[in-house]
Image 1 (cartoon, one colour):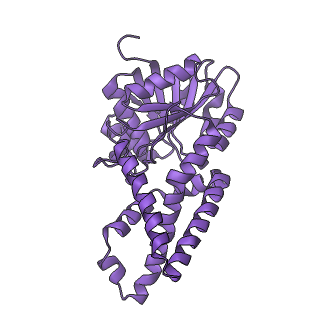
Image 2 (image 1 turned 90 degrees about the vertical axis):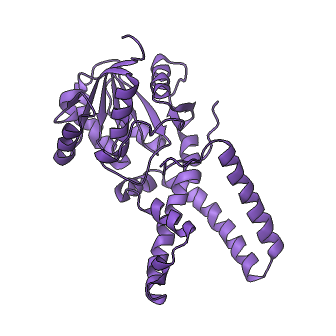
Image 3 (image 1 turned 180 degrees about the vertical axis):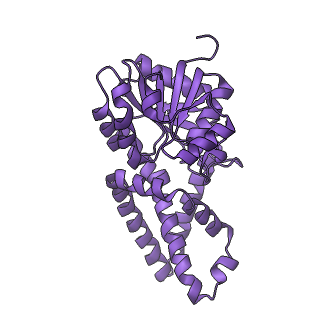
Length: 309
């Protein structure tokens, strides 16, 4: 393979925002000879065919898996095990399987148990996205200048290095990380904020009756940002919270303790404590901006700074 080509044939399972963006990015960066896509939904497959963002739209992952050098799972976390079990029998030795999910430890263990001998799995998580969904929502530049975390057992293995080169070719900054560490970090920077957004928007909707419709009418920028986060895929986020429950519950417990302390400061009029906390959190925001983890580009799902090893 010449030029930027890293894998001969790439199969992307799932035609949503991330999957369709991957196909577009692969074609733009010319990282493979052939890009095949498939989706369990016939309507999505038809739309992928119309969009012509890949070389082939397969009727199923089973029929395409035997051709692939790299298979990337771009389906909700709860659907990954079923997806892999549907095509595992057709995999060739030395095929690399990866994913783009926000949970790594439990999903990785599940997928690895389904793969035949000689087939490697390396978890992947591009920290990029928008609140939009579906094949029309994707765009080739989604991953540019965004972190992609990979969780291989051996960072220096040829499959890990090839996958690193693949994501770098798509414009991502690549970090290697232990899967459990990834799940704790993302529980803090992504999963808990989404949980809070869902809860806050739910509370606000309950208040609509009390305020005679004025919550929506007079929504300030902060609340609008929460509603944008809460507009993310319900199925995907249901799966994320169930698959990463231990880390989420750990971080949620700490958050509740901190929130209770703020509640106490407000109740007792402790302005010094409030000022100290707000100053600390403002400094964290400055660090995120300085690290280039905020921009005008549509990128919901961005999750703060991840240091490379």
